[in-house]
Image (spheres, helix red, strand yellow):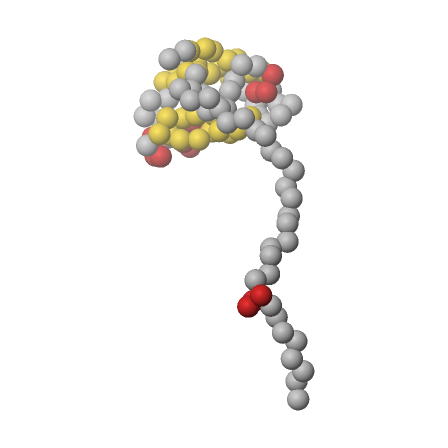
Length: 115
């Protein structure tokens, strides 16, 4: 698995969201990168695994511990990363189109006069 290091100048917010941790039985990964943020300008990629935060291994680290470690990085944040085995989802977010639901004949509302 390919590894790389990312250094982001502080303070927080850095512009990415975490997913996983010991308490979720999954590795800490980048779930989202905010466009135009400090994190968006580098090689950080959605789906990549965080193996260390400021030199501290994330193995056995809970989600909250990782968040707190990241928030405590005041001048800079250094992340040791591993490329995801699977490619990050490509955002082809097409504009949402609300189409009217077809009305099935037996579901039509009948206006019956009240007497």
